[in-house]
Length: 148
Image (cartoon, rainbow, N blue to C red; front, side, top):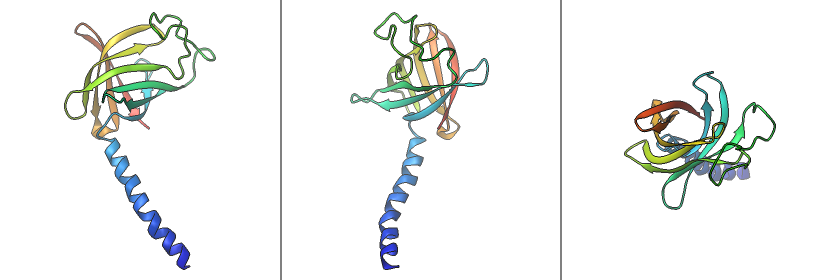
């Protein structure tokens, strides 16, 4: 009984830290996101966004949901990602903080088209969702991703 009590006392700070880190995640785009296709409303992939050593945010596809073919590659890409597997591919590069819960100045790749767009992101709904935009000039297409 005494050992169980000590274990509980040691575990309590870890549990509180975990609760605090969940709250902290809602102030940053870092983490895992379910990419939702705005045309179909269906989830397409899981994207993990992380902070690079220079403070910029980058994101990679960690899982494709219901791909059109097994182990697809970026056949239409024209940069260093050409013919590379889409799973594990970095699709967001160089996002820079632009105030609380907003990022800009990065690039986003749409692997099925092989096109790279200027991008910006913003947390919405208290950090539960991420608005991700790909832009050409002043015309932008936006997706809303859900935090996992």
